[in-house]
Image: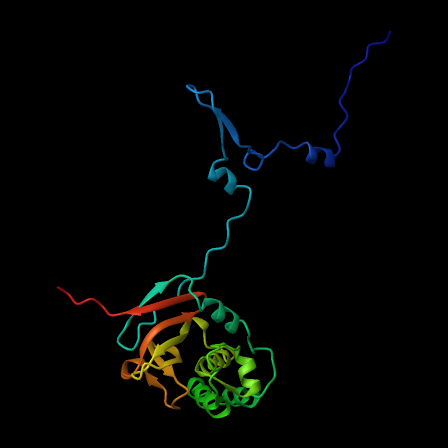
Length: 239
C-alpha cells in the first residue's frame, strides 16, 4: 500500500475569524470561590479593568465655564436640581437654521461689522416681546417659540436673547441664565454675558447693558450655562 500523509487543508478566512482566540477581557466570566471554613460558595464579578476593555469609555464631559460670580455674591457649582429639566428643554430649541421675525435683526447685525450684537439683541427683544406672567405655571419656552408668539415672562426674555446671540456666534459658555430676587423679594431672571472677563447683564426691565458689578438691587439664587449650574453665597469673612 502506498504511503500517504494527512495534510491539513487551509482554513477559510471566515472560519479563521470565527475560530480566533477569545479576547480574555470580553470573555471574562465571574469566578466562583469556596470559603475554606464553611464551604460556602460565592461569586465575584470580573475586575473593573477587565470590564473596561469590553466597551469604549464614555466621552469626557465638556469643561465647566468660569463660575459666574456676580451681584457681590460668590458662585458655587451644584449638581441636578428641580428646575434643571426645564433649563435643558428650553435651551434645546435653537434658531440658527430657522426663519422668523428675527430675520431683519440678524441681517442688520451681520451687515454692520462695528455693531454691538449684545446691545442690539437686548433692545430688540425688549421692544418686540411683551411681558406676560405665566400665572404661577413657571414655564420656560425655547427662544424661537417666545419670539414667534411675541410674549413671555422674564425667563423667556433671557432665553430668547441667549438664542439670538448663539445664532450670531456668541459662545454658549459666555452666557448664563441667572434666576434672582430683587429688593422687593420678587423672583426675576436675566441673561449675563461675559465680555473681556467681565459679566454684563441683559435685563427686560431696561435697554441699558450694565456690568453686574454696578447692580446692587439683585441677589442671585441659581444660574445655568450649558449642562452646568451654580448656586450663590457670601464669601466668609476672614478671621
